[in-house]
Length: 252
Image (cartoon, rainbow, N blue to C red; front, side, top):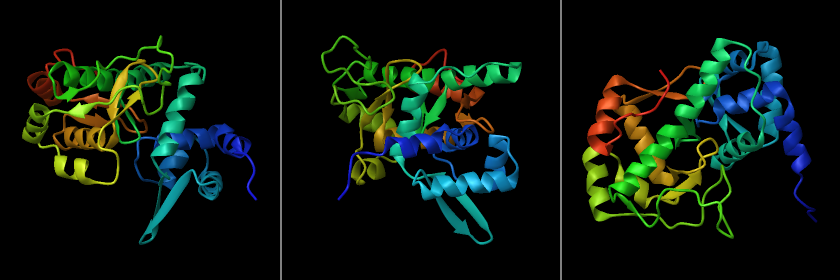
């Protein structure tokens, strides 16, 4: 017979600093080898292997062998959302160097939340989709005064966003794979309350497909060793032309 949820066991896994850094490195949905994660966590390779084994055993991280190499990733979107939710209530890490400050600013400017865009870029893009009628049903804002207001860093439930016919055409012309996004088992259109901006960003299969397409176009690029992304010069032009984002945000 099963008892109540064992939060303490998950807390113990996440609460060790090196394991927390590993999870933050994987929270954008990437698959990374142990050597990269050891560098990200600032520990020796043998220590990283021990931490990864704990995370795999605890169900937070999955591992896949490809030939002689093993690649690690978070075990699913729920883990990515949990990391974002914890980031919303965690105190800021001390900024001890220019590098630390630059990384913190980059994360707030533009980052991935598992496999979709977040930060100022994600919120600005969501606002543009609503403004242009690509998405209908809400205003892109987080209304804290509502009796059952959505929680930050979690899937929202207050609003039922829908993709308009005009919006489907606009995203199709951009090359977003709408057939896969709308036909899969994953909910096609969801939204999260962004933890740093406190407004909505697009998630679900459509949010993932849009982020994937922007990477394919080289409009955004991941920053090494971080969930932050930067908007390229071509991306600034494209985001302005397609979505009216004249001051497209993003690190770099």
